[in-house]
Amino acid sequence: MAAPVKKIVLAYSGGLDTSIILKWLEETYGCEVVTFTADLGQGEELAPARAKALAMGVKPENIFIDDLREEFVRDFVFPMFRANTLYEGQYLLGTSIARPLIAKRQIEIANLVGADAVCHGATGKGNDQVRFEVSYYALKPDVRVIAPWREWSFEGRPDLIAYAKKHNIQIAQGKEQAAPFSIDANLLHTSSEGLALEDPDVEVPDIVTKRGDRRTITPEEAPDSAEVVALAFERGDLVAINGKAMKAHELLAELNRLGAKHGIGGLDLVENRYVGMKSRGFYETPGGTILWHGHRAIESITLDRGAMHLKDELMPRYASIIYNGFWWTPERKMLQAAIDASQESVTGEVKLKLYKGGVRVVGRASPYSLYSKKLVGFDEAGGYNQADAEGFIKLNALRLRILAERDKKRGKNE
Image 1 (cartoon, rainbow, N blue to C red):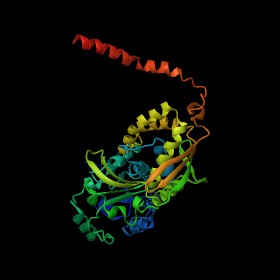
Image 2: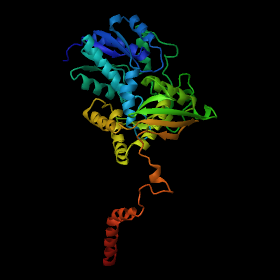
Image 3: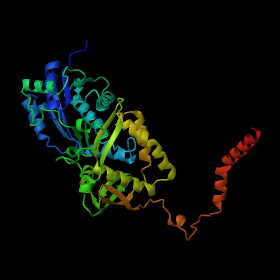
Image 4: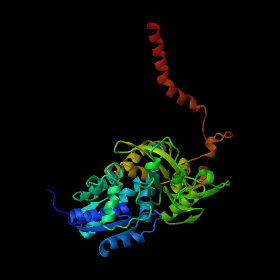
């Protein structure tokens, strides 16, 4: 029999589900609950989370609301973008990259308050349960993890609502019925999934793409005039927009504004979940989409061919590591070290034209550029002897010539 739990740190949003979890933890485990709410730039007012926790009896000293926006972008988003990371060729991993930071801070709070358990609100069907729990164990091997959706007896929304009413848990207007879709948001992106989006053969409905809290508009709604934006990079990280230096989270927020204005970053995606099923979602990553194109463009003139191609080979592996929740593993750290080593000369400025959902490179320059007009120019040799190409070609073709001769002999014998 497991030892009794003394104190739990709950990842708490203040919404209905985590408020139900808070009460359920107190009833089921009979212990003190500490709430932790992370500000990752999700665009919501977080003060109500404190008020709700207080109203439910949580001690003031047990309520943590932390602004993690700068750490999120500087230490998680930017390192990921140095790798030009895409999961399955499209997804910019906006949800995945937030989980290791939330777990890290949750464990820090557990150590601070002497808690012996942590709790998350992820379901038993999704990837987030894996991302949270693998991170917990990596950072605190002996921690006890409580996952209510895998433990309680509630079978659906009606059971949760009945429990909330029984315990006088506030139910916001319109929350008694299941929402037409669910949303996860942070400064990098929003992801919408479930119900209205579950049929992949039906276009994403207007209630998703044109809702009041959407991150970006549709390309059809975007202005009819283009806008050029200049991004400055140092060692692979964005440092300024249109000549203005800002903090990391401010830079991403400004890119979000620009991307949203021009209908950039919407993505209808069917992905392969780590737990084995396919999932359809609508993702909005306006700033991240611009950043991805800008970083790729500055690398195009500052990275050696061999380094760039090796990065492209490593990237899918790196993307899977993040998607599957293994941020704190040795293999991610090893890959990160290799990626970061490639970024020493990735410095310069990229000009991008934003127009109706599209991002187009219209200029790039770097003090460390490997691009040589003399070498590629048609009017001058620039130290390149074109006759040298003959030997290079013949050496590369040698094995093919040998194969052809062999096949010719085999054909005669047959």
